[in-house]
Image 1 (tube, rainbow, N blue to C red):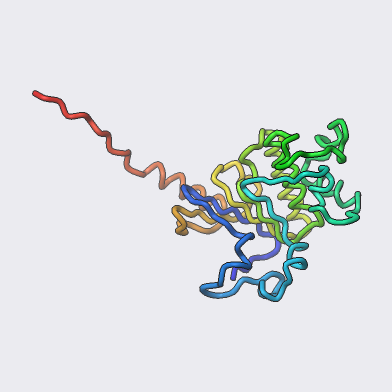
Image 2 (cartoon, rainbow, N blue to C red):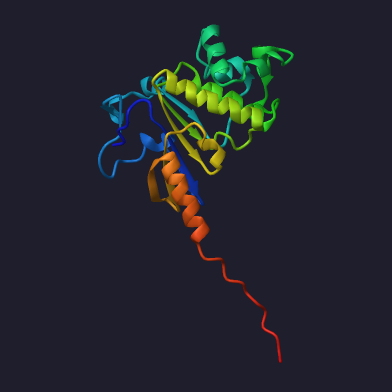
Length: 223
């Protein structure tokens, strides 16, 4: 069980590793301890009920055929327009959307082919924030973002904190750590460090600077 105050924002900084959290949290059997959401074990929540309280941005973003509004609202029937716009604003993508010819009614092809990779990732972030879920998990959320997108991501994470939610970030790029409090560093699936961000990052930098240089292979020559 991972128990931290609601204001904590955690980053899992993984090197040479691939981590999956939310999609399998309710599918893999628990080896030790328990996984709880709001005090209740995962199996006490129905998938539909649990889904309303969890926002997830996968590493491999997948948008679906339909409008931008439908994608943000997770294709919820009769989704309130105000909630869709609030999610887009929370993700810092509202201005981008309204500047498209059809705005929120812009039709997306399968896998969001009408948008660039960075735009898709920002729309998917708005989808993760739709309905103000308590727990937000972001997997490599800045892999396709430019400087503007990274700034919007940081503000979105701070926004979740401001309303008392929890954000967990899985990332390789250190720039994703800007808005987190705690970092769990992992190498090949093994925990290397956990604690306040500045403390863990400082130790990681020191460890890498003290690491021996790789051996140089010199071809053998005759004579």
